[in-house]
Image 1 (cartoon, each protein chain N blue to C red):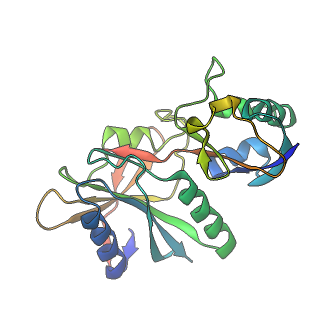
Image 2 (image 1 turned 45 degrees about the vertical axis):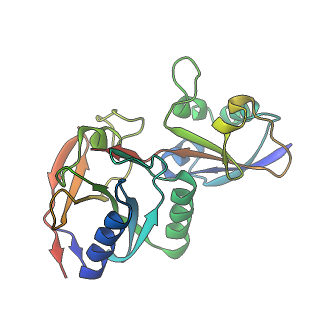
Image 3 (image 1 turned 60 degrees about the vertical axis):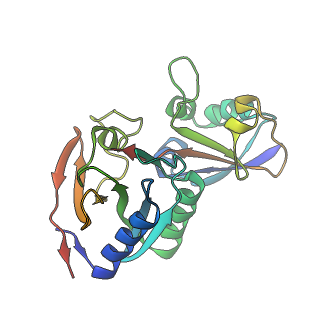
Length: 143
Length: 92
């Protein structure tokens, strides 16, 4: 069960709202398993229907994790008008090359967090996308 | 002409786990061929059966996407930094 500080949840929701009408995306870093920071990443697709994380920013964050002993706790993105559940595209793109669901996902162990702005109150949910393309919701415990 | 090559985690497996190394080439195409000679399987990780670059692999020359330069024919020079970066994407 992912234990996530309220401030981290609030920051992901704030990012999602600020980037309307487009989808927002980013990464949550953890230290010793505890989420410590939300890193907003530019959405190169700049679209309400899809996101593509700015690859150079992604690389810099990966280097930061390596250098600081941090881990990738979560990859998050928003759905501006649909539920907080990974779409078929989200599942395909969790694998490299995309759709090769019989391999290990690109980021095994990392939570995929969806922030839905479909309703007035944001809905934030966490999932694991497993080998085989299986989606498992992991109920968030807010701490 | 040595350039610095950066790769992220998904591609690092193909180059003995390195995140940064030196390689030679006058163009992106030559660079990929040379890396593949040193690390067999590298090209197969980023190209399809026809040798075309996978759509969801980004190659950056310094801070620019080579799609907006000359693609695989983009010239590179001593001291450049070339990064191979798989896309992370999705949508509703």
